[in-house]
Image 1 (cartoon, rainbow, N blue to C red):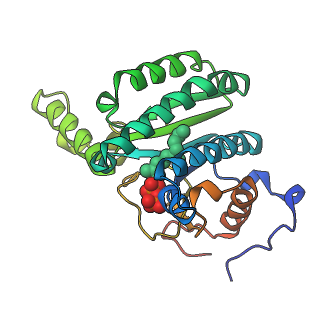
Image 2: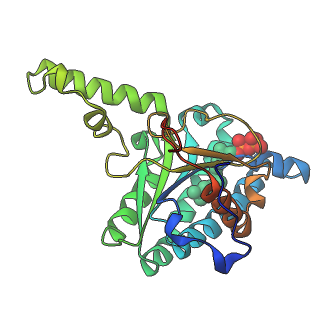
Amino acid sequence: MNSKPAPSNDTQQDFSALPKHVAIIMDGNGRWAKKRLLNRIKGHEKGADAVRAIVEASRELGISYLTLYAFSTENWQRPQAEIDALMVLLKRFLMSEQKELIKNGIRLNAVGELDRLPDGVQEALRETMASTVQNHDMVLNLALSYGGRPEILKAVREIAHEVRRGELNPDQITEALFSDHLYTRQIPDPELLIRTSGEMRVSNFLLWQIAYTELIITPTLWPDFTREEFIEILRTYQQRDRRFGRTDD
Ligand code: FPP
């Protein structure tokens, strides 16, 4: 058996074994709304409330990096009205949470093809990143207009240019060098990836970075995802035996 006994309540959470970096695919906003005969956008609005709760919980628990998949490169294919609503929501979130992020020592970072975002969102991102740059307690990393394959291709192109310019010998291309060309260069790989709404997919998220990440999928739709369930998932993670291809011994 490779599992440790589960602590029985919150106070017994083993903080030493918490993941440093948790990544989340926040899925199910549309289904949450549909179940209630509401517009999908209402689901995203409720999803933004869940984002606030999980950011706060992560900070309190002492997680160092939280990466949230807020908008994928594929999401640009959604109806324009939904894209517009998501962008408005994002901008509103950035502007309204700025003070809270500063107060809680959270630094905002963003990864993805950010130049594809509307000017207003880019501006809000720049402003929030600048105003939180001195914060060191946690990094909130938003994946926006993000896709794992485009990220890998960007790294490949950059490296190919360096080789062509004679700055790099192909034999010097190591995993560490490759990682240094990804959007996440300053961030360790996530130990835990959570996906809500029960889908068993990674959907082009952090493809390189999740090579050894533990995956936990919950059927809960993102707007219903709570701090309590988050803590429960962290407990499940703590019982996993991470062997990285080695044996137990
Ligand atoms: C997936 O649900 C969710 C998204 C594409 C957007 C995620 C956005 C938020 C949680 C709110 C805004 C974010 C921030 C950071 C404030 P879906 O629409 O694919 O759901 P479905 O699969 O049920 O249709």
